[in-house]
Length: 443
Image 1 (tube, rainbow, N blue to C red):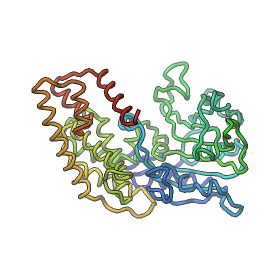
Image 2 (cartoon, rainbow, N blue to C red):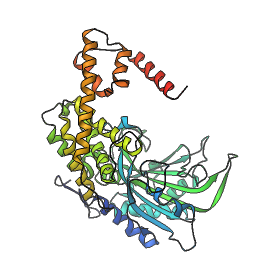
Image 3 (cartoon, rainbow, N blue to C red):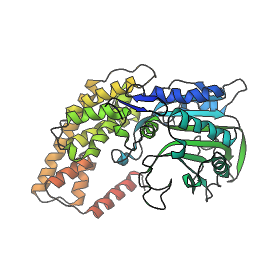
């Protein structure tokens, strides 16, 4: 690791900075697959055109759906391209893990039948020779025999023939990859991992160990079959290989770290957030700074795509992330008006690291309006909380009502309770939340 703005990998000469991390990784991969006839494509829009299956683009393959499913004889046989994506599941993992709400996905699609050994050999050339991920530190997890899919023996045999040590590959049962449900191609998926520490936690430590030794950064989906209504499968006439991974995770592997927030994609955003929050208690809760940094990137992407905060569709996603960020800032006693500053830095970081369509600047008015709405709502909830506290009426029901009726975020409510030394019946609170979810679903 060199200066705060640059890291390098001596084995390949591949240098990653805050402005080139996408292009460097993509170009290094294209140097291998371009020679195989693959074409390089620029990113598509963050909001997919003519596809209502998702609010935001979730993978490069989403823009290439017609090319994948309707092949023509004169069409290109392979595509490579980066794509900014947004995913809004498992938000509780943000900050405490490397789960990201937005990321730049690199996809390499190969259409047509390709021998497993050749496919893996080309990918290993990229990993080892172009990205500097030493062959002896790569590990793999294939699909094992299970109730939902047969064993991917082809990948296991190919890894063996390619000289991958038996200690560095394994298999576990799981569903086949199935990107285009319900009738699109499906098939086994091979996970690629990198040995970050090279230090086993014990004699049984291997690719499936959760000790932090391995970082999972790449997938290969061998989409060679189609599931039928009967439960059986048939071989598709035009199979394809979907090889993809988040470039942020690739950068983590290249720079030998399992903390993505200390890599070039996040470094400037994180340092800005830390400098703005020095007068708060944020450093006692570093995960909360990471949540704001993650959300700031996604907010910047959505604003640049022309999304305005609102109550529906893409606007609802944006508003939810803004308010989650404001809730985190409130829970550490930070001024909510630092959020636009962090988003501005995130916008510049995304612009510098992107080759996609021109991006607009941050909309201060949209963020300022959301901040004022949030503060008004939170002040109302605080007054209700204080009246309940005075009356000693902080039951699980009244606490739940602060969130469901008055809009106080759970993180803020829990910080109030902790500050006042109040404990509540967590089991009863969970029961109320479960009943409310069932009612909202009409059950």
